[in-house]
Image 1 (cartoon, rainbow, N blue to C red):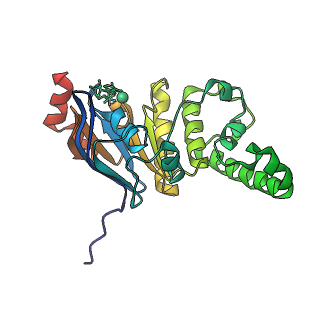
Image 2: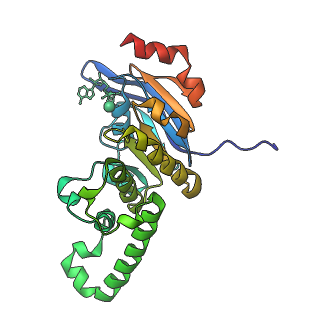
Image 3: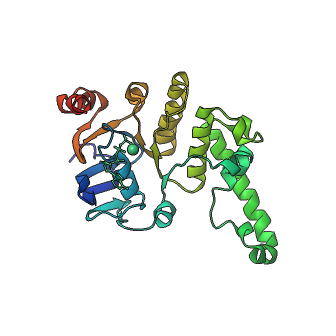
Length: 259
Ligand SMILES: Nc1ncnc2c1ncn2[C@@H]1O[C@H](COP(=O)(O)OP(=O)(O)OP(=O)(O)O)[C@@H](O)[C@H]1O
Ligand SMILES: [Mg+2]
């Protein structure tokens, strides 16, 4: 009583086990991600980071354990279902989409767009125009959040590597993301620009309440922008807490040296 309540967890991973034949890729992983936080997931090659992301986002089913998002057990649900609940993983913009404009890329992230169905679009023409208008307004708003408003009419393939990452985030938010998972947002981005992407991510977490889980090998470039760090090794969580605590933990240092 009288104490500040702990930030509510938006995602809980409970005792997740995933095997590939004889390999135990995830060996009882438990995690709690607070709503509106930026969490960094680290660990040497093969420690299970991508497998964990695949289980959480529904691309793989675990043999044991549960994944709970916003209080809903999503274990084994399809990626599509999970994304509709608001847990969205970013992907590189596919080649054909890179020829579309930035705005078109954000608009095309919405599924269930009535324009996809010509029959419905015809009948609901009036509704459809209203829908288009609202969607365009929403897309512009989100482009403002990620700092790409001025680029709205440029083709995606004219963007820098860093701006492309911001566009991936904008697409995820347009889909309705409350939590965004990114595997290596700094890969292919000029080290000098990584900070500005991370600042945007922090802004989206603080001001818009969006939760981020980020896997990143370039730890030194991102650590000052994250709230929590989880470190994995050989399919297990070996440390969690503040960036300083985890990055100075002898077990974590050892896991990287152990190769
Ligand atoms: N589809 C698969 N089939 C068989 N083994 C797999 C498969 N996916 C991952 N593994 C194995 O599971 C373990 C964890 O791999 P994972 O890709 O999750 O690691 P990671 O932490 O993402 O590594 P990296 O930093 O290199 O991306 C490794 O031993 C890997 O070889
Ligand atoms: Mg990986």
